[in-house]
Image (cartoon, rainbow, N blue to C red; front, side, top):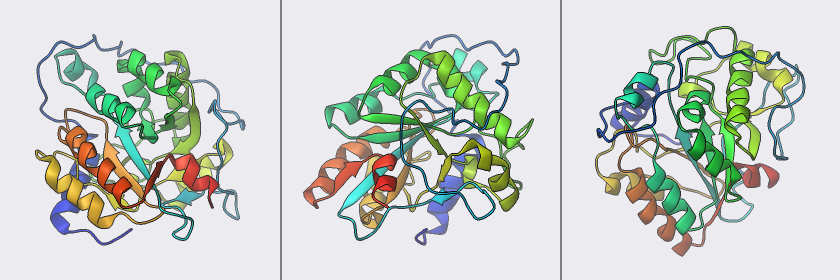
Length: 284
């Protein structure tokens, strides 16, 4: 990953700590789902995703492979990715009016015809099933797994609580939440909350046959109040094959939609093609 300034990195890690929560507007939102435990489907060796997408080969001992960027010499292609975060305790906050979704961002991506990969937590899909279903049904987008409730898969991880019940079970629980919401085009990609992982968890997730997707460009949109610095950071760091991490959460990333309106046309002016993560992985 390219070197980033300490303030920018600290800001991004803060988003990981809070799972992209924060102060939001008080417009009425759909009631939060029940806090009752959700049954977890038994783990299988078959992939849970519903859309065919390329994956990287596993490690020598079957570990989950990691993808951080595409080839630098395979044309000017960049993947914009958006984390749709919710944690296990944010349902009540959503019920009180805090927004963890960002419909305006999705509308802008559609208007600008921007293919994108959305890394979604299972709790987000449960809180916003109609939006999750709409995103999954749109061929512009693909939905990837960002855990069920954004707990740490390796500790320490910036204060995130450790995942309960095992990494593999949590991953499958998120895929099950997508299925219940009717989400199409889920792909076999997984993003670690906070980016935190270790050899043990990579081995545990190996049988799930997913590719772990990290990033090489941090947008700095977490808690950013102005879109200009976010756009400047992406435009300064983007390279052929880059995976840019951004957020689909009004509460914690209110400037993202406006930043995208600057980022997309300027990248295209520079000759870049915007693609999904699956397109970068297919390119090698």
